[in-house]
Every structure is written in structure tokens, then in C-alpha cells.
Length: 213
Picture 1 (cartoon, rainbow, N blue to C red):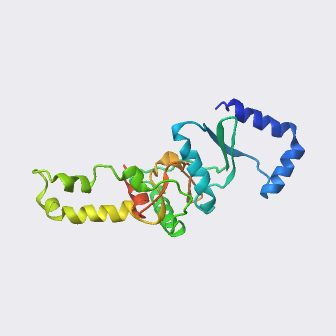
Picture 2: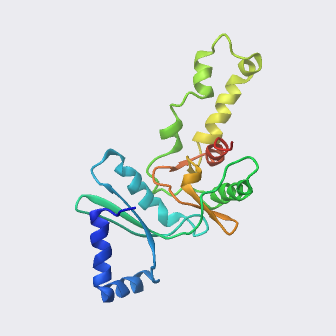
Picture 3: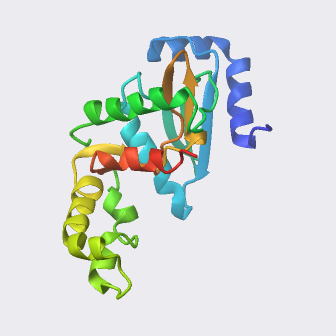
């Protein structure tokens, strides 16, 4: 993977100015061997996802995600640097041994990320509130609706709202394998830019369970 021109300049600046790099490592309290860098043009509509990631990262325990090392905007780019975490993408196959540790991750998130940090820029309702769930079915009440569903539609809509959309937990709305890394019987969140939002605790479990196949 070829780095962008901005990252290439920054990397070679550290190589050429090792004393400055050593002082920087002293300031952050550790020597950084490798980092994961990502950036986006700050004027792009989706640049808010980087701002959200930078805002919520300091609230994530080390057991859940790599540490945010820096966040800055320069020359029109918003750049983030994260601790390098080795590992592999987990498997969501029904017979995979990774399912248990991902389940543990979801439970840990619910415990460690409640209440939701006020720094989070969006909620689950912002993303899923308009989705055609039970509330949308309740509003239309189609004639071919299953009798059991018709009899319980009001309760289903209420449960859907309470379990997923309303809540005070920082949840992940896309627990896709490409957004996680597993190593040593533990899983870390790898990509959480626009996916970490305030909502009901069941939202993380729902986004994970839909990928099991």
C-alpha cells in the first residue's frame, strides 16, 4: 500500500529528525514502533466520521480498541494515528471459534461504555430511525401481515425502539469482520469512525448477529 504524499512527508520527517521523534515519544509516554494512520479531506461531507472517531476514541478502554495517538488537521486534511495492533479478521461462520470472543466483546462494550460519552456526535436513531422496521409496518398494517405479528405489532414496535434506538450506551452499528481484529482469544475494534453512536445496548448485538452466516 503506497502512503499518501502527506503521510510520506511526515514519516520521512521523523526519520530525518530522530531527536524530535524521541522527544515526541517521551511526551506520549511510549516509543512508537508502528502506527496505523488514516486521513480524510476535512471539507468532505463524510469527514464528520473522523471527527467522531477522534472524539470517542479517548473513552474506549485498551481492552476494546487501539489507542488514539494523535489527531490533527493540516493543509485541509484530518489525520488520525492509532496504536498498531497485530491480528487477523475474525470469522463469522456459524462454526467459528471467534463467535464466543466477539460475544464477549459485545458484553464488555455494554458494560464499559454506559453511559454514552457526550462526545459522540450521532445516535443510532440518526442512522436506523428511518429504517423500515416494525414501526413502519405498524403504521401501514398491510393486509397480508401474519396473524401473530398483527396481534403483537404494537409491542414489537415498542421493543424495537427501546432495545435498539433509545439508550445510553456507546454502541457499534457495524460489527463486520473487516472492522475487528482478533488475537490471543480477544477481539479489538479496528474501525469505528461513524459506527460508534449512542443507543440501546442491543444495537451492537444486532449488527453482529446479522453477519453470522
